[in-house]
Length: 170
Image 1 (cartoon, one colour):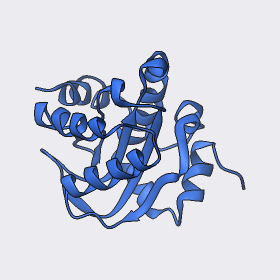
Image 2: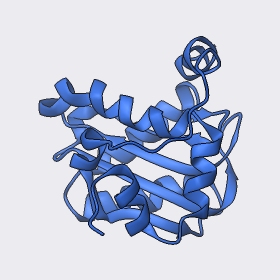
Image 3: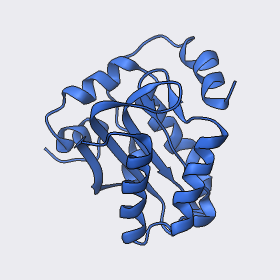
Image 4: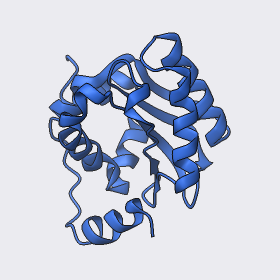
């Protein structure tokens, strides 16, 4: 079993299901409007990784090597969860500025073991790794629960998503 499977089995299945939104300040700190993609039209995992990776490189948030490190990490074991989300991440040494990228795709993509519609890229620089625990906690409060993900699919736009997690204005 990989770490995602172990986490799911040990913590998520044991947790009582909660469908309440709460502020996620650690996640909000690293989410930029231009990197929240609602209604993506990606057909495959590779297409999505290449497209988002290119956007991150173009913005100088990561180096070209980051894309390769994302793909290599996926080869080690999928970053998908049974709830319908994937959490791809690469080597922090290739990240210039910490960034979280949120993708809500129009259709499911076969990732590794699971079919996913929500993909959250975790791009942490070496200087910010001390904050990763809190950010991951915020991310897992969304992706651990299929009902929370379904609520995201029903949202009208990314502004509603930002308001729900506490980093948008009314």
